[in-house]
Image (cartoon, rainbow, N blue to C red; front, side, top):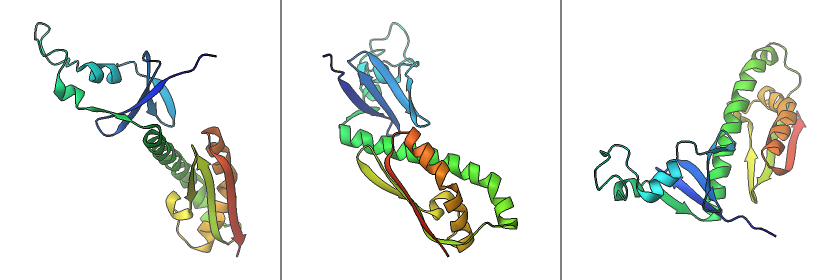
Length: 171
């Protein structure tokens, strides 16, 4: 059985990348891995500086460029991957809620309280509450979140979350 060796990297302190079997490089963007078509990982690992002239001895091996990349442990990489995935999903949900909130505010469905969605992503537990989605803590916004929890579950499971648990009480 062939195993895949994966190394994770943080580029310029913000971009998460991975390299599989020392060959294939990917960057994490919008909740998914995309091929590193600009060679951000490899260029930083060898210190390739595209701004140096071709005949410069500093074109490859530039420590300034090498300092832009940091190898991560699996745990650190998963923490960053989770943060970026949740950030992406919360941004998506906020936009989705902006479309339905005006109609809900005119004719709210039901009041609720203590509404939250908890889940496990890559072995770490998280909880989303109305305030995370740009909603208030009033009973009507909590009711809106409760009506939206099915979408939260579907999206979370699509991005690898397990043990998704939606809770809330009709007020």
